[in-house]
Length: 241
Image (tube, rainbow, N blue to C red):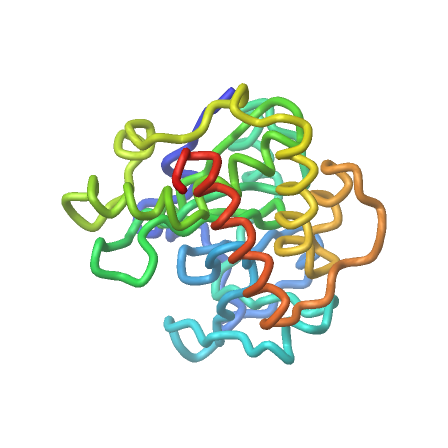
């Protein structure tokens, strides 16, 4: 059930459509959606960095900011919601969340494959969008898989440049849905949920996974532990001792 979109909006070709709040203050903000770029997200984190009106660079969000479930990042550009809906309708995607991975990367970085879920939004071409259709638990397991250290190790052996393209991703050893037992999913899904559902704007993702509670508190130490547990579990699923 894997499909993809390599370019929802191009930072050059579609720039004439971008709405820049630093240049003007539109009154119809409720009909706009933020334009996420790769620099805004990181592993299991859709609030990695926030943009400022006076700079094209993004500033890393603090743990204190992310501990507030109401905190949302600022993006420099915004797009009309109907333009986003039009692009996503081509994939028959009606969920309130998206999943994507960073296109620009490098085998010398600390991590090479960097993926996350994010709220339904406009997305720049620096983020590749994955549309994984099927059981919600398996979608969460897919995200956990491509975010794991065993997968990342193989990814950095395969990568020959600075782009993690769809063609490369398709050649990497992603675990098939049949590899997961109910016991596996019972271990993986709650941890992926706790790592990704840390803010109110990801409530749609949580509901898709069958969870209707409040966001999980963003705590760096507990997140480190959860990620380590997932890395170890995926290592076992790959057959490592």
